[in-house]
Length: 225
Image (tube, rainbow, N blue to C red; front, side, top):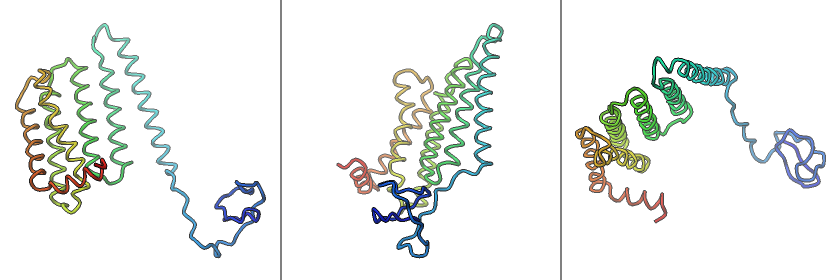
């Protein structure tokens, strides 16, 4: 900590001049400070930072190499299999960031993982002789799995119901999407989409019956209505 006699202020800095008047700062004894000095923000360890850089480089190289090979061999294998590699790498980075970067907030992690995995499986299905298995089966079951997981977390930690409400509503909306796609004839198999929509509707009705006040308060707090 340093002090500017001209401005009569203490400055927590390593520079020699005052940022306000450019006068020379005087060093102060740390023991006479009227308040504690905040610790410097922690930085990523060098080994971990080097690992992230290496993984980034390998990911980019893997995508470039597979795209080049795909272009050179496209006459023999006339489909864009390199897109599968790119999508898989993309999902890997979402998984890495969601798992290790965002501490806590498990419901948000579940929704992010469900969306990323849904997009990944759809891309794999689309670029490998599109059969529709991702839209017909995988995405409805993923939405149900995420919704059930959040429900169980809420049951065992009901005191924090407000922390789960918005994520539960988001999961409900995502669970209805496959059924909407079936209505527009984009999805061919009905029962997985109907099961996901039925579960979402049941959970929504349950909240309106058993947690109507909490739901109303959360909407007021979130949207200021």
